[in-house]
Amino acid sequence: MSYRLVLLYGLSALIAAAVLLPVGVLLALGLGSEVALGAQALEIALNTLLLTVLTTTAATLIGAPLALLTTYTDLPRRPLWTGLLAAPLAVPSYLGAFAYFAATGPGGEIQGLTGLPVPSVDGLAGATLVLTLYTYPFVLLSTRAGLRNLDASTLDAARTLGMPLGTALLRVVLPRVKNSLAAGALLVALYTLSDFGTPAIMRLDTFTRAIFVEYNAFGLDRAALLSVGLLGLVAVVLLLEWVVGSTRERPGRTPRLHLGRGGAAAALLAVGLLLLASLGMPLGVFTLGVLREGTGGFDPAMLLRSASVSGLAAAAAVLLALPVAYTATRGRLGRLLERGTYVGFGVPGIVLGTALVLVGLRLDFLYQSIALLAFGYVVRFLPLAVGNIRAPLERTEQGLVSAARSLGASPGEAFRRVTLPLILPGLLAAGALVFLEVMRELPATLLLRPSGFETLATHLWAVYEAGYFGRAAVPALLLVGVSGVAVALMLRRERSHDDALI
Image (cartoon, rainbow, N blue to C red):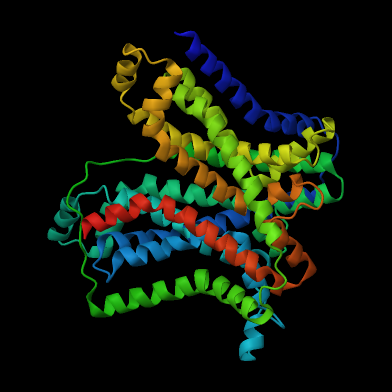
C-alpha cells in the first residue's frame, strides 16, 4: 500500500470521526443526564409513533397503487404524470404545513375566498395529512424501481390460468416487489421521525418539537435525553432499512394493462385531486400572498445569506467527500469508513443541531458561528456528495491513469488531467445537491445560526411564529423552486428510462 493511499485512509478516518463526534457528545450527555422526563415523555413517544405509523401506512396505500398506475398501465401521457406525482418532493413538508395552517380554520385563506367555514388542519390528523402528501413519492419511486424489473410472463401466466387481475397483482406482483415497497415505506418512516417543521406547525408534541422547546427553555439536559430517545427510534428504522434492502430480477417485457376510457378518467381524476392537495394548495396560498402583499417586504439579503452559506457547505462537502469516495473504491476498510460518514444523514436535523450546540458551548470560539453552522450542514449532507462522487470514480478506467503515470505524469498531474475531467460531472452534481438541500434545511439552521443571521428557511419560521403569513410567500416560492431543481436532478434517470419505454 503506497504512502499516498495510507494518507488518504487516515484523512478519511478523521472525516468519519468528525462526523461521528456530535452523536458521541450527545449520547454521552444524554445517557449521563440525571434529569427525569416523567409522564410527558410517554405522551411524546406515543405521538411520535402514532404519527410515524399513520403516515407510513397512508403513504404506502397511496404510493403503491400509483406505482402500478404509472408503470404498467396505458395512462395517457404517463411520463408527465409520473413526474408530476413525484413533484411533491420539491415542497419541503414544513411549507406544506405552513400553507394548510394558513388556508384552513376560521379566518383562513379558504374561508376568506369562498366564505365557507373550513375546519382547522392541525394536531395528529393534520400532521399525518401533510406528511403523507409530501412523502408518498418515496413509496412511489421505490416501488416503481422494483416493478420495472419484473417480467410480464408471470403475470400473463396467472391471468391465463383464470386469476382475476386484482388477485394476480396482489398474489403475483406484490410479493416480488415487497422489498422495494418496504424500502420506500421505511424512508417515509425515517423522514417522519426526523421532521421538525410539520409537527411544530401542526402543534403536535413529538420528539422533534419537544427537543426544540427544551432547547429554547435552556433545558439542554432534557433536550439531549429526548434526542437520545429519538435516535433510538431512528436507529431501529435504519436497521430495518438495511435488513430489507432491495431485490432485483432480470428485466423482461414490461406488462401493459389497459385502463379503458372510464378507468383512465377515474385515474386522472384521482391523480388530479392528489396533485391539487399536494401542489395546488401551497402554490396557490403562496401565489395569493404575492398578489396580495407584493414583493416589497422581501429582503434580498436573505437569499444572499442562504446562498452564501449553502455554497460554503457545498464546497466543503465536495472537498471532504473526495478522499472518502476514493478510499471507498479501494477496499473494505474504505467502504467501512464511508459508511461511518453516512451516520449524519440518518440523524435528524434537530438532534444534530442540539449536539453541535453542546459542542459550541464547550468551545466558545465556535458557538453561534458560521463555521459551526457550515460544519453541521457538512455532517448532515456529506453522504450526498460521497455517493455522487464515488460512482464516477468506480467507472474511471485505471489504465488511463497508469498510462499517464508511465509517461512521466506525477500523481497530482494524472489526477488533474485524467481523473478530474472524468469525475467532474459527479463533483458538480454532488455540490448542487448539497447546496440545494442546505438551502431548505430548517431545524439545524434554527439552532446553529449566528444571532441575526436569517435565511429563507428561518424567515419562514419567524413569520409563522409572528402570524404574518403574507411575508412568507416570496421565500416559500423561492424554496420550492430550489427544491424543484434538486428533484429534477434526482429524477433525471427516471425520466430517461420512461422515455425509452415509450
